Length: 314
Length: 314
Image (cartoon, rainbow over the protein chains, first blue to last red):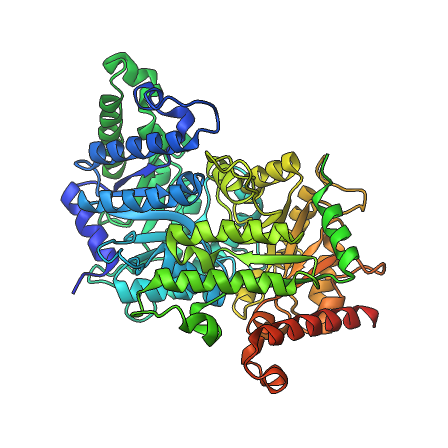
């Protein structure tokens, strides 16, 4: 019997001694010259070559970071961008990451109502049942959008329960304009995000979802943005593990992150994407490794892990 | 120069004399025996055969309804459910529907932040730029999720502007639990959905989006649920065409729908999915046509069009 997702994630964090997660969202335009150039693009629309390069880069990033982090978050948009060929590549990467014993989070923000969410839950979270794909695994967890309330999320929770997987409900975004919706005040004083968080807390407490750790297979995406609001969300969702984007390139600080953790040091998985995977654009690393892009990524990943751990020791 | 999306949609509605749209969300388990059985599924996981059947059914439904309605809404979840093969099938259906001169709406509810939304906008809305797909068109419009506010929606709006396409922002859902989020009251008395609607109204009024008709390429998904709340959303988003699910199988009434239209008879595109595409399960049609499922669908489509037109004449 496989373990509850929250327990598995916490074990992986314990094993790697770090709650850090690398986000894989590779844009062809930013790939290292070594990978992009030998693809010999004929023109801007030679997207098969671009996809090959994106996949090779992603595979190499996964291999580089695997010794240091417990999990990777693969952003489906960057693969969907190459249509069905890209989706096939996304599934290949999920297998690759799983083979490195990484927890794999599919960042797809799916969500709709009723039977439509059932279909998304099957495609985005279940282990594939397509003919001849019997050995293929789906991601360990995905991100979902809860605009339609519990009806829209329940099918994902059902799959999570049946297959010991996880769901992170998107509660708070990292971008500037999200506040117009999410930070707007409700009657009674909560923000819209806090109101949603109250719902998510109830869903997370549902039968059969809580692991030995006390955490639920239903977690929340909570951007690293402000210490106080993060602390309030932490309080509102005691059983939820937080998936925290926004650190590094998007401006989140160590203090923002610390507020997502409980006194015992558990509570969140912090993700960094661009600040790690594009480290070869950062002078700090280029000065040390010149054009050895893989070394830049490895160093940035180690720095990221060290920074997060330092933030939590304060 | 192709026309503004809102103008194109209104022309199509005018031509077919009906603001009715058929939703294509085919579930293998409900397909007519004629199509499902000759696929000879070996077992529940023989999903290549299931996908073939789903695609054949969808093509035939599109052909049946094309003379009666201006638009079809294709629900991506039911194709994603078959992984990359399903996505390829979805694009084939988009081409097929376009060849029937139907306005094609991709119901994908995509939405994230910044560069991720840019990637989704490219994959879900743009005409494909993948190698050897030069002749392929994307859908005319898609549905998007605005949880992250304008930053998350802007990339879709940009593509809509560049390629004369449309975006329907998901403002109000048709399912029972959506109210817990969307009908919750804000400070000042608006519901969360109405607060979002105010934002959408501003986005819709942006430069270069309004057509000759006075409507914007940015519309809203507004479920047919209650006359008063629909009327308020109509008032809050004067430039937005409404895409209205929820009629028929989901319980929306003629009165709910009428509230989305302006006195001149314009303002919304009403969709029905299950009540049309599964009409061969409805005794009302089975009694007339027995097992001739295509005739059941055709009759249900004609009835749907007639009902909507009747609702608008009241």
